Image 1 (cartoon, helix red, strand yellow):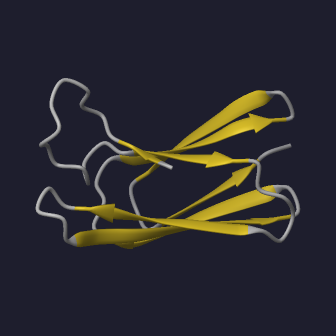
Image 2 (cartoon, rainbow, N blue to C red; image 1 turned 30 degrees about the vertical axis):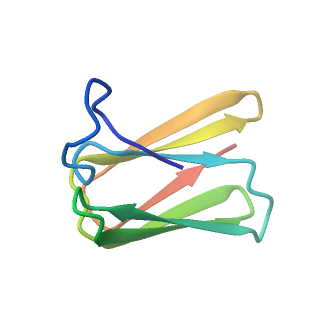
Image 3 (cartoon, rainbow, N blue to C red; image 1 turned 45 degrees about the vertical axis):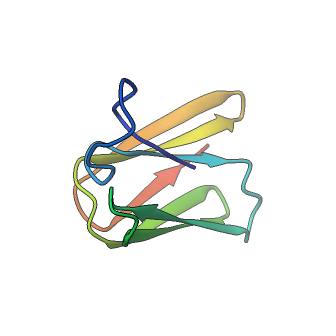
Length: 92
């Protein structure tokens, strides 16, 4: 789930400061979402995949200052910031 960083208006740059939330991936499972521009065009496609205790999130497109938040991994949330095209998080 993509969550923007502005909550006081609907029209802002969705590609800047985005938090990508990942919920309940089991080993081998993949999830994806698209992030759109304010005009509705696709700005990026994001894919998360779990292999063992690692979740890798890949971005195909243009996101800036993004982060990943893995929700409820062993009773805790895990967060990592991205400045490139990929983040791998060890959830154990």
